[in-house]
Length: 189
Image 1: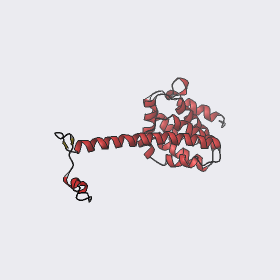
Image 2 (image 1 turned 180 degrees about the vertical axis):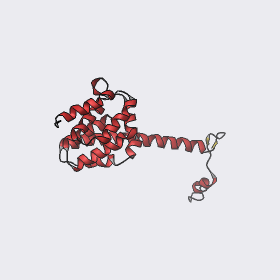
Image 3 (image 1 turned 90 degrees about the vertical axis):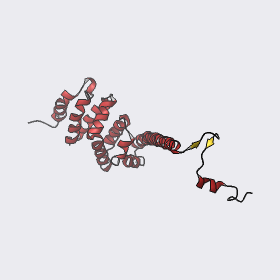
């Protein structure tokens, strides 16, 4: 009969074909197998092993594939569960992984990861609080950068739509705008 102590080794053996040197995910093609293992992970030790595999993975395209195949959603569930259970060790490991992932605005819009991390900034445990604050700061920078790009694109579109009177060296002001700014409307004669 197999003991509980054999479980982690058996799990690692089953993952071996998908892992490269240093315990990382071997390639983009192997990300699906890791996501499947994440879906099936029930034991805490297996979740921790998978988090260490993700942490060991340095290739952004592999991590992006992992996230796109459902890894982000599973990490969101694990974070929620570990927060409810007050599992500080798992919370810290999860946030370390989240710090490493190449997160996009689209990712942040999925699930309630941002809300969960914000709640963790109010935890009593100082390590959790600090890491959650760092993670929020990182994600807010992504949000602000994306928002800045959208505003720049919107300004560019507005400038392209606005007709200009280049002969006079100024922008064309539509008639309805002229009336609002005319001297007689403002009381200046």
